[in-house]
Length: 306
Length: 306
Image (tube, each protein chain N blue to C red):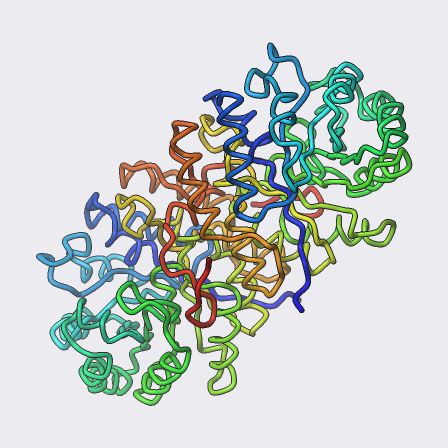
């Protein structure tokens, strides 16, 4: 029996909220259905933010309504108390909260220090747990901050500890600007696995420098078994030159399946969904595996990849 | 003391011969000088082919004339007896010959079977060795052929054996269409290290599916210490949608230096040369590290990268 790895598909939220083209609620529902059809069981469904701030995520409650009976864990981002109330109203079963290691980053994004952002989420997470809602915590800028640069791994340790103490079920460690090197992956996850249950920790990597796949390889070696990824590499400020986004789900699954891990996801089907998404977002995706096409899908022997 | 890894810069030959824009002899000399300035000591200088067939490589003998006094090993591709005579005339000290694992591939490219291509090179390599000229052998399509698909690793073993027997000093194992998975890297180099001195074997990887860097990580684990790479990912049919070429030298050096290997090459200087090359080839390079820019150059602590 091969070991299972959990893939968290973040395309419908972290991906789409960074795309210029705004997809209708129906299209977003269709995307999530297609993604579930590839075998994915954990997906970000949307975000309960103001549609004025992020119009890409409007009507996330309707997305939940349309998909609540699907056999998949759909997670919704909750930025504050108000968003949490909408989440409760909608009856979602999984939410995500977020902070970072860098005060400069949280101040710039949510006008709070890291500590203040955690103070704000503490009662939300407590209330969610009492209501049996699963909680995922995101920590941004763990490997580098656009304003502060290098981040000491101990900062991540501190934020992780606080989020677990609040009651978070899983914590996703983010390389927000995609600068991590395998050496840094080893330091950070090496520290985390000493202090916490590594099975509850995810790696959220961006492929900005083309290092995401080797970083996942390194994280696997450190015991990480949960990886965030985005179909076709969706997201990541695609219009800014030099910026590229989330690591592509099809590349992550291709790597993992070939290494003998079981993702439950079909790479061939992911490539087909990426082609559909590319038309919908109306811009050329840049993820290399997708661009190279669905030919020659084999590892060390010819095989069917369906 | 950190272990040394040899980088073979193939941008000026394998890179440029696949670019639409033809660089003048002077520009190619300038490029090689700049590359040597980054610390690179092994480079492809050009190819003794007909300028009618490959105008990008015209006057490769002049390139050698201009650069013969540089403290770098400049290698020139020799496709046949006629090319070898030009090489001898020019007085180069390093040549490269090439074959593949796939008969369909060699037939399509040089109208010969693999065996026939090796028969043709045998006297050339013999003569080169008698004249104390270093010989590099390239083997294409080791991990997959565009016409035949999957390739049995034993085919590579057979071609490698024959090339070493002829007298080749180093053999470069090519993932020509960029389909290799780390699992296949492990099988192929695992076999090769059993039969041959792995220090004389190079990995020549393409980043078509975004797997080149993780494949290099895997090859390192198998004992490979010679890697081919191309500045800024130059080459690889850049105008064909979905095609991408050689792994970028700056990404390879970034990976290796951070893992504690010594390449002798400055990543910051490579990024500057990539910017220069991009202007000269008049098309946007796609290599991710280059696109993301020279900011945040650190591994697990802040450091100077010059």
